[in-house]
Length: 162
Image 1: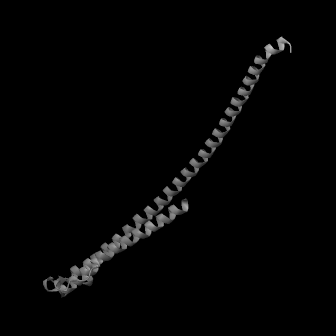
Image 2 (image 1 turned 45 degrees about the vertical axis):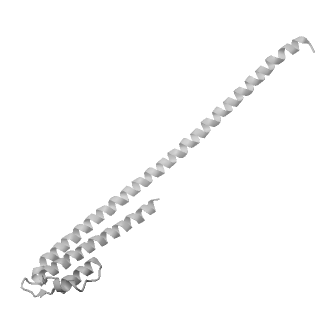
């Protein structure tokens, strides 16, 4: 082999290495760019889905809260109106209820068995006071009922938006 040909081999190898290295880094750069573009597109799509879900949930929550507030207002107005009617339906001079009625009513309201011994110490109660207490208890019961219905409606609405 001629000596001139042997002297060019290291330069040729160096050139091939440079070309291969350049092709590698060019391909890698292109791959990174395309993966980054796909990643950005997927993130953008996910962000849009999240924003749409948040908007739907906010609209559903607003609708349910508005309905709940209106229902509670109506329940309170009805309860107040019925309470105002107590003197008409149960006059002030109505009979006095025995202490056992108060003990039984309080036991039922607290969902406990009445203490039989407490009947002897229980004070009697005017029928008008008892009627007012019953009306207030039922009004509170309807408020809690409406709260539970609204909460169930909210949970179902949130579930549908997912």
